[in-house]
Length: 447
Ligand code: SAH
Ligand code: F3S
Image 1: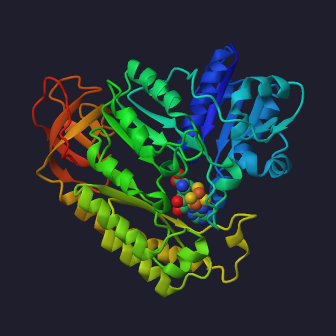
Image 2: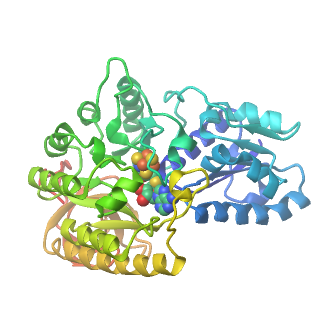
Image 3: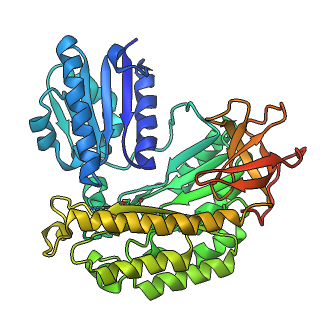
């Protein structure tokens, strides 16, 4: 049996694509290996979102050169966003790479690998949406990602995604539901519906549908306990979706809603399609509908032309919204994007300073949010043992907080149990098992 070693960088969608590739190769008699040294095929699933992501891939490819010299028969492949965006650059900087293909070509991975045995292959053309059916078996079935739509056509001026992932294409609700039913039959309890702009789901289908409808259909699937979705774009956040967050029982009280900047001037130059006031109105509507909701965000510091005042407006939004979690990125100029050609690029030291400051503010705000959970009893989906102490169980709240607790000798894997939160630590919560319910159902008002 030939062996494949998969290395995945970047977002959850890449994780999903890697699992799909693993499954497709398994159908062609490959088996997975954790060690590159005894692999016949090494595939890097790459991310192009920031320069740092690309540099990581190139340094890994550099390290693999030695392996290739020792065992020239090993095939090295690069897939994903970098492959789609810059196939020539990969071939130039890493000539030992045998195979380069973008995500549209994933469905043909086995055929591409066969061709690569005879000579270098580059495949980055557009292709129809992958079929969601024929999903491979998963290793970790308790929680699964399901890509419900691909691509993005928002064209934020800093972002490569519309170029790497193509136009918006939604999978039909029937196909998504069938896949999740199948996952549930194999023990899956929680699904995360994925899309670059997941709340634009369904507009392109005939008849058109939307994410709120899809959430209701997924909610009805027996065995599934929790439904998440990411990433939502403020531009497409409809009252219908806010109502779904409030009314659909299995949809968790958590929303990731990237703000990117708190300054109208910067938002306009980013082409985000909303203002600071509009974003804050959405947050108010969300908090009113779902008071317990945990909010998280992405933001960029040092976008071209961002002044200290612009940046302070972002800081203020972070404090006002009181996010549970903030992902802050230093702006990284991406070749071919409009923002890369804008004047007034911000110096690295300034980006570093703003990044440190926003992280400090975000950390303080998140710690306050965590402390509010102390003393409360929350349903926890148990998914393993604690990293620090093998006798401790670990799981997640509906808001996706990690909770560690003493399982009192019981094997609770895959169950939802009530845990009283005793202490909020910086990256996790500690608690005590409150009581083991006979049939785990989740309280609607849980955090
Ligand atoms: N809608 C997408 C966004 C993808 S990119 C999603 O599914 O998450 C994830 C985040 O990376 C963005 O929200 C943005 O904050 C950040 N990002 C994108 N391009 C960037 C760039 N050129 N420099 C720095 N950060 C960037
Ligand atoms: Fe990128 Fe903006 Fe789409 S950040 S993924 S172009 S919504």
